[in-house]
Amino acid sequence: MTLKAPFSIISLTLLALFLSACSDSDNTISQEVTATAYTLSEAETKKGNVGLAAWGDQLEPGMKAIAVSRDLIPKGLTHRTEVEVEGMGTYVVLDKMNKRWTDKIDILMADRAEAREWGKQTVTIHWEAPQETP
Image 1 (cartoon, rainbow, N blue to C red):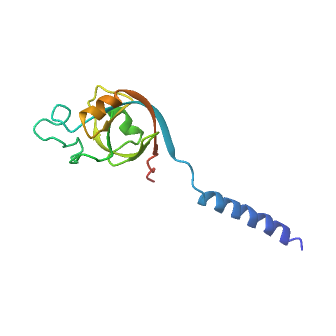
Image 2: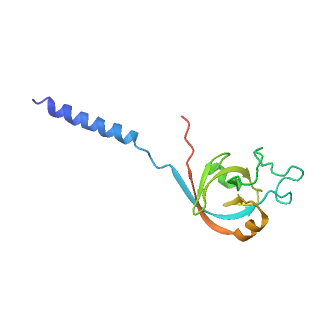
Image 3: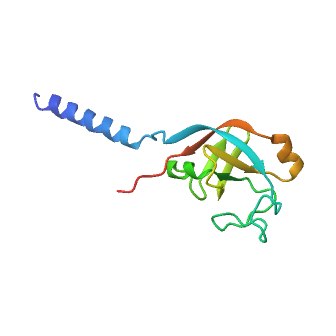
């Protein structure tokens, strides 16, 4: 009978460790950034190849895409990362901004009127932290 108590304690400890390892850990990163808008006009994209993004993706009207300032890339906002823009929904990182910008995203809009209406706003974005490689 004395062997059952230590066995039960060990079993419960192992079960607790197993369950904690199986639970989803919150790997979400949140950051407040300045958000502006851009369109697929030649004045706002690559000259001579409208819609060609910095990572080589061909952007199309209606895509839920964003460009990120390059300081956000080491934080995990890399090519094809899904980003929740509070109040707007989920977007995909498909473009990079000029090196002069920091803590900023550029949201692809359908037309210039929509982009002008958006203007410049402060938003909170959320994304999953990149998985560490062993």
